[in-house]
Length: 315
Ligand code: ADE
Image (tube, rainbow, N blue to C red; front, side, top):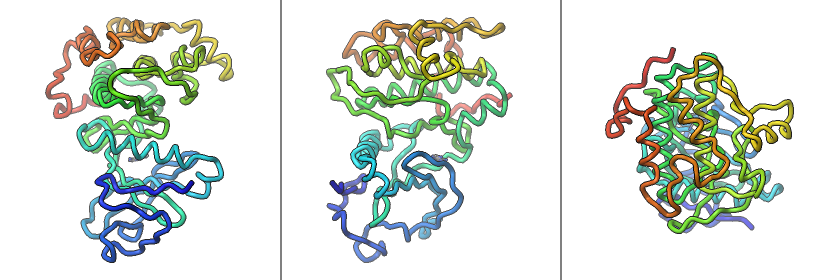
């Protein structure tokens, strides 16, 4: 079914067949209100394009999803879920890409998002080979803070990886791509059953029981921390299947020189039992991330000024 996509503010009940070509006609935005520039990224169902709002000259990243393509692949609900997730996350966290507006025309859905000018963390890691421990600490701390925020609002990301961690003007993290996000009731927490994600970051419980919970994001956090410092995946086989075998067997080793405190944190995150991961806490506990924040690896992090402190130099 054709799903209407309302603006996050819910300003109007969108008629999915309406083709608003002018914002002044009915007060709603349309693609005509933006100048489209470079392509910033491409996914299976979407293209992210640099957009400048004509009236204010404000720049954004506009995610454009092709409705025909979505419909043919039964993905309209997924797109709607992504929008709902972004709306639920609102504008309350500096580490999460904000949805400013959503609108549609006959062909496409448009999500107008924060522009993260410094691209994907993945490109940084690739370019530098690996990140300094100080950098990895800073980004991991920001990721913990962003995860805490989204988990408290009942959002599980389910596809955390350096490609989905963008860097803004000040090289701070912005989590993006909630296309595989899951909304859960808050509280209580229940494991949900759907296979999504990327091979190298998939948790054992997803592979074995096809279940995800907030704790699956903690597994991915461990994989991302490992990768930032080691410059390679924690789990990588010659095929997806062999990668999954390694994950299930917890088959990974630290390269020489890997910061011992970071290694300790990785070991406490890459734990097979989701409830035993650092930060998982007791089911329903709102303060579970505190034990993660209290880990010695974060001893030098000032959590209250985390989003104002400058990023360590990229070395
Ligand atoms: N690529 C994908 N999403 C983006 C965003 N929000 N900002 C910059 N580049 C992106």
